[in-house]
Length: 287
Image 1 (tube, one colour):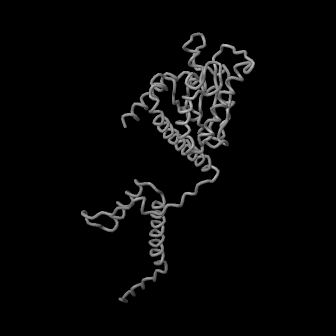
Image 2: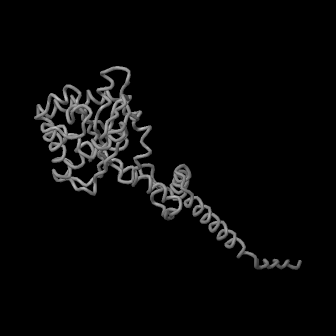
């Protein structure tokens, strides 16, 4: 009986497909890992870390920590158009803060300069009032002038010289404002309250210049009876309205014609400002 010849096994020429499939699988896994790493999501990082630990058979007491900080982040480019308003607002806020601090320093210096005239502040005849325009040093007219006159009295020069010693050391513009009550004045020298208030302001300006304040910083303005801080229906209110205000302007570009709202705000807060001035004076006196 003839022996059957064993059939020779055919050589498999497609075995390379197995290696190719393994390579493609690993390559796909690599891209999946790279995609996961590129996403700044801490949860995905933790899942990828756990998968790597399991795949490489890491011991239970070891851990692989992958954090978003380890992945490079693209630089953030700021848009010049969007950043400019923010920078401008910051610069404006910083400038306002410096101006406010400077006005507070001047206010303390003015109050300290009035220590020899403490009764004027305690009686409300001199007030140091902060406002949106800057700092106002308000002096009642009877401290400086005789009724219906615009010539400074001898004793009033000492009061103004005390203010001038503080103002001459800075470069803020100064506006001297003359104010009257509502009672009309008709004389050969002053046909109306306009002239009286303007000349009184000019008299104060001349004395400040003579005390060392630079003339280019000074402006004299007469408002007449049009900027009252109290009612003109009572003698006390009329006395309060007859005054000269030395306004130290914190903003050199401030327009004096835009101060109607500021004047009304100062009128409403006059009592509180007077009390703050007295408290500030007492603190300076104790110091």
